[in-house]
Image (tube, rainbow, N blue to C red):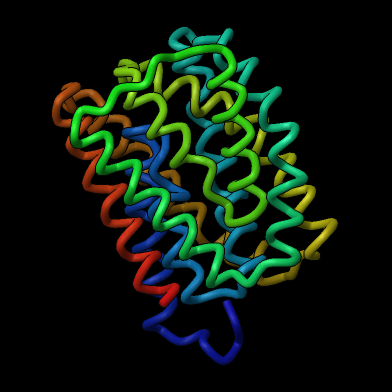
Amino acid sequence: MEESRCNPVDILLFMVIIFVASILQTSTGFGFSILATPFLLLLFEPAEAIQINLILSLIISAALIFKIRKDIDFGILKRLVIGSAIGLPIGIAVFSWIDIGRLKLGVSLIILLLTVMLMLRFRIRQRPGRDLAVGGLSGALTTSIGMPGPPLLLYFSGTDTQKEQLRATTLAFYMFIYPLSLLIQAIVAGSTKTVWTSSAMALPLVFLGLFLGQRLFRVINQRVFQIFTYVILIFTGVYMLIESL
């Protein structure tokens, strides 16, 4: 956190963001970056916000993956990873050369458009080529703004993927894409002491969120899960749109 903004209000906001996002990530498999990144951008420089998100998301994914690995669809996972290999360098190029405000505007419009399509019962037929494309888009969004979740969530929701498979497959994908994205970010944009001290400070709340999120996951049925997905996407899209204007 920037020294000039290191005050009790900012620290409290940071803690609340991390706690709520950790619960969401654990209970759904996708929510940490979607919820945390827009708010972290209010408190940190873009590269710092993205790297904090990547570090904490990786920790959450690593803590959960072995327990839910039986639900992973390895065929889809393989294609997502292959696709992301193309998207990762594109994303860091976008981060380096395009104004972050314009990038957030474009992402917010895409999220809102695709969410409306899902709410209107638009359905997507799952195909290997589309798995590759979604992986590429997710990779590009990870290195550019630290948010791999929206393409995966929109795609899996459109194909009516069960929540257990959605959570397990996305978490397994994150285990690959987060450390690689963090390395690329650190090489290209550099890293700071703020990134690592803030991440360390957030760890207790991350683990508390893990505990509560696991219990929440057990009581969410498929319909509630779908509605919850729409609410998160609309909120994120509208918030990013307002912030970019």
